[in-house]
Image (cartoon, rainbow, N blue to C red; front, top):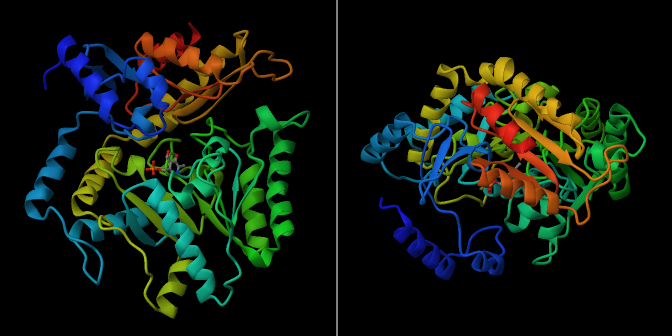
Length: 446
Ligand code: PLP
């Protein structure tokens, strides 16, 4: 593809004129003269249309786990496209890649998650879950169990139901969200909500907020609780260790299904196949996407536990739900090749034993900085909380401005990091080396 200043100018003008981007202020983009155009990538580096080489410390959108330029994944797609480019999995048909991937995922997933429903995105996965869970409770003779409980700052997708599950105030401000039947509680975000409590005591208090909400609604009306093990797009909110065991216990006590959204944390991000292993969680349902194909093709999977699946099978009756691309054979073939790479190259062990601890150490080094209020990480996902007053954990005013300044500086210096409010977030490809971590952290310090 041609690059250089002529094509860049033409692309920017055309992009601004015709292309409505996700999560973008269109007026601001036009005033700034258009998008940065990424033309190619290799390993952990992007190249833009002006020839700048940029270290991608965000793995695209938290998804390019095996890094860019994997010929093996392109070959898997090519081979499958020649063999069978498309067939659906509706109406009692299947394809070999979808069958093989379902089997492989159930072998990797936490105990009991022995069934898979495929989609193309995390949002579709979470919409599927809302419909499947309500259907499940109806089949169980408890159709009044309809309400989903989630957390503030949660991100579960952009469709009507998944954005209702989410706890993003800005998203709820547009389009009349959340829909009825979606409730939100305090997140386990010690830095912002912890006040004078120790992190562990606060973790228990945040779990109690889930119990209080269940009791306020009435357990007979609560279908499920959903949470990301670590709230990624909400600012890499890592809960105190006391939080998840208590939430799981509360869900069991009130017969509320536990849904653990591993769209970001799955496939090695935290140094485990799934973060549920770190927290000792046994979800009833677990949505997956992103790292399942390392972002090379769109694919998501809802991992469904025996409890729910057994009822669907026992009671019968059609589940009136699905997508044209559910179990797309080319996406599934690429996912299988991607899982092979993660396993063969020991990427999960690398994160757990080498790069995860190193990232934690290098982030800790930033704690002495006058505007760093907290650092947090698990495996290769982390955040640095910028604040005006460290002792009192007071944010800058307006919240988010410092993050934008810092993020823009980083990308101007050749490193992609993300700002969520004033939390600087890192979530690099799992092939990141220590030298890449050094470069990202040193750029951030500057
Ligand atoms: N769930 C979580 C935890 C996510 O972080 C995201 C996206 O960032 C989604 C769901 C939605 O995934 P998608 O953008 O593929 O619809």
